[in-house]
Each structure stands twice: as structure tokens, then as C-alpha cells.
Image 1 (cartoon, chains in turn cyan, green):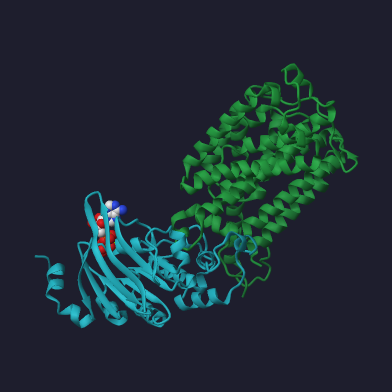
Image 2 (cartoon, rainbow over the protein chains, first blue to last red):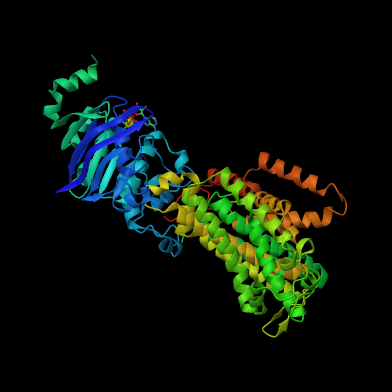
Length: 242
Length: 369
Ligand SMILES: Nc1ncnc2c1ncn2[C@@H]1O[C@H](COP(=O)(O)OP(=O)(O)OP(=O)(O)O)[C@@H](O)[C@H]1O
Ligand SMILES: [Mg+2]
């Protein structure tokens, strides 16, 4: 069963074709890794799926529903979650407050008006434990280190619990151990969640990817298993230059 | 229950004790003095209303005086009808022969009270929908609301036959509330206004600590990020704008009662900017601080404007500039900082003391162990 179907997607930024006729599918519960050199259009592809950027052409279907004309919050409510390349957490809120905002299964105004903001929650405690931020739960997010900020945003996506999660370079700035922990967490999500992960760290990709797509200049250069990608001539050329 | 909520409730209780017990005793239950203080308390409501939209949601509404004025005029229209025999006097002078249709329902007090809340809310809501659907933010919100304020005041002044024009609505009857004729120079009237402020503050504290308030703070910091969590940002912003406008209207109604007239100066730019100053001086992040800011500045104005007759506005302006430069979070920010320093020093001293009951919320420790 296809969770996401992207067909002939296009976007132009003042003449630059950042995404140029891209098509791919992602199956339910699969982890797809998106690779490609700098400026290949990976982040832009995620932007198009979550609604940050409007496509100039093509279609994006989630569970068969066309979403490419929907506003961001509607797509989020259809189960699309996004982690950004530059970690975006709320620096002026505490760690638990960040998670409380992210826990948005009922995003309506009435629900928000009839709840106190920080009811103790087992879910949030578990997530904090999982990402190792329990001790810092009352700290302002602005006081966290870069690595902790990455963890916080990952934790926020776990709290949001979207079915389709778009992760843009989640392990940037993490230690080797932290990267391994992230891989474990992602593997435990697969099956119940569908993930698209943009990553440069090949050992991480080897650990988590069910399938890989390599992009270059806004188009799909290659697709397949890690072994297939590593022996692909086009991919070698794209990464090494001409 | 989390500690920040707990401290806000304590602060609210202390504040209520001061305005209900302390102030009347200090003024030896003198009706005249208490009337002046009731004026400050009604202005505190409009200041805390601004704190909700500006402090919590980051929407600087420079048109707060317009919604305040709507409430003030709603009340004044009711009281004017009570004193007039069919047609208010100024209408006759302006060759208006029949009571205009919009005036008719203001015969009823219930309608007036509802209109004083709902008309500002509806107008605020309309402007908000138009702005926030289009994702207008930051300084443009201030510009648009200011433009609305100016246009609205002009309209009120122009429509002399309906509004009394430049003179406003004067010569009003006293309010009769369920058989009680309100004497604005009485202690009970003071308690009425203090009660209204308490209710408004309780509502404000609740909103600040609800999930709604949390989402507004998230929107203030990063509206786009918040959309990706599925929140309809425009709806959240519109609702807080409406609530804030309704509270301003409520304050306006009380203000008319205190001063016994309504004037278009209530909808003036300088009045609207004054509200911003009170809110900033007290601290816009806290509704309670914003209310205290309004009371302090007005108290000072009452005492000092006799001394510096003409210079008062300049003094106020200078104070505002100093506040923005040296204490951008207002008095509230200063207190929060001082308490945090004290606690850090104390925690350094005796780690295992059980007597850290005065820990404020901003302290970043997890006490629920
Ligand atoms: N909003 C924008 N306006 C103009 N150009 C943009 C915009 N966003 C991206 N681009 C351009 O589109 C191209 C693709 O950018 P994108 O961020 O998707 O690359 P990427 O594959 O994520 O690269 P990286 O590995 O460096 O993150 C780049 O040339 C970039 O400069
Ligand atoms: Mg990128």
C-alpha cells in the first residue's frame, strides 16, 4: 500500500528548477532515505510535501488524497510531520512546553481552551526519557546545546506522532553514539510510521534505510537498495563531479 | 498543577487583597478618592486586555482604544436614553427628529451590556480575520490597527447627530442595576469595578496557563513552525483578538460609569499609545503585571501632573523610552530576574533545604520529584 505518491513534481525559484519532474512512491511503514549532493533539492522536496513551498506543477498524494493545494496545518492534520534542517524549536519555551505544543492530536481551539497547558503526561515523560532530556525538561530550549536541540526536535516529532515523518538531516551535529541511538529510534518507528530521511552520513543510512533515492539537480538520479546505490556509476559521477 | 500557575494564583490573591482591603482602608473609605481609584482599575482592565494580545500572542494592537470606546459609547447611549425623554437633547440640536434605529435597543440594559462586549469583539474579530488569514504579522498589525483607530475616531466625530460629535455624550443618568441606583462616589461602586477587574484578571490568568495560551506563545515565537503541528494559527490569533477587544469594551463601559460621560478622546491615538505604555511598564508577559502597570502610571499621573502640568506627557514619554531600553520586560521582568538571582544564590548555599517554597516558575528546576 502506497502511503505517499509524488508524481512529476516541479518547482522553480526565479528560473532555477530546484525540483524538476520528480516522481517517487513511499510504502506504508517504510524508511526511505533521500541522498544527493548539496543543492540537489532534497530539502525543497520535503518543503513541497509538508506545504512550506507551493509546487509549480505535479501532484502529491497522501493515502490517495491530493494534498498539494492544502494549507500547512491541514496537511499536518492529515498526518504529515516535519523536522527541519536548521533545528526549529521554540527557544523561549521550556523543553516540556515544546513537547506540549507538539502533542497536537487535537489541535482545535476548543480543546486548547479547556485544557491547562502542562498536565503531567506519561507519553511526554517517556519521550523525554527516550531522548535523554528528562533532566532538562524545565530548561528553556534556547539554553540547549546544538545536539540537544536536535534531540528536542526529534522528540517533538515523536510527540506529534504523525504517520508520515519527514526528517531533514536529523543527525547533523550528533556524536557517533547519539547517531546510533537515533538509528535505533528510527528503526523502532518503521512499520507503524513512514519516514523520509535526508542524510549525508552513509553509515547511518546503511543502518536505517529500507530504500534509497539519490537526487541531483532536482531530479531522481538513482533508486534502490544500499548495495545498488553504492555501485551505481551515475551516483559516483554526481558525487565526485565531472 | 505546575508551579507557574500556582505562583500566578498567589499573586492574583495578593493583588485582590490589596485592591479590596488595602486601598479602601488607605483612602479611609472616602468616596471621592475611591472614585479616582476606580478609574485606575477600569484602565487596568484595558491594559491587561492588551497584554493578552500583545504579550501572549505578540500582536501589538494599537487600536485598543477603539474597542474601549465602543464599550464606553454603548454604556453612554443607554444612560443618555434613560435621562432623555425619547430623543436625546443633542439630536434635536443637530436636526435629528427621530431616534436613530441603532439607538433604540440601547433602552435595554441587558442589550447594552451584551453590545458593550460583543460589538467590540465582532469588530476586532472582523479586522483580525482579514489580517490573520492574509498572514499579516509584526509591525503591520500595529499599522493596520492604528489606521482603523484613526478612521473610527473620525467617523464618530463626524456623525454628530448620532454620537454627539466632538462633545461626546454628556449629562448621563446614573446606572440602575437590578433596582440598585449606582452612586459612582460610593464604596460599593468601587467594589463593583474591583470585582470586574478581578474577574477579568482571573480569565486572563486562566487563558495564559491554558494550552491555548501556550499555543499563542508558540505562535508569537514562530508562527510557521506552529502551523506544521496542525494548529490553525489564524483562528488562534483571531480568537485572542476578540477576547482582548471584548475586555477592552468592558473596561470602556466601566470608564463611562466612573467619569459620567463618553468622549471621542477615549478613541484617540494618544490614549491608545498610553495603554501600550502602561502595559510595557508593568510587563506585557503577565496580565497581572500589565494591570499593575496601568495603576502605577495613572497613580503617578494623578500625583505628578499637578506638579508638572504641561510636562507630564513628555515625562511619560521619557519613562517609556527608558523602560523599553533598560527593562524591556517591564517591572515584571525585573522582579522575575531578581527572584531568580536570589534563588540561585540560595540554592548554591544550601542545596538540601526543603524551604524553597518561594521558587518562581521561571526557575529551571524540576521540583516535582
Ligand atoms: N526559497 C528559495 N528561494 C530560492 N532558491 C531556493 C529556495 N530554496 C531552495 N533554493 C535553491 O534550490 C536548490 C535546492 O535547495 P535545497 O535546499 O533543496 O538543497 P538540498 O538538497 O537540501 O541541499 P543541502 O544538502 O545543502 O541541504 C538550491 O540551489 C537552493 O539554493
Ligand atoms: Mg537541505
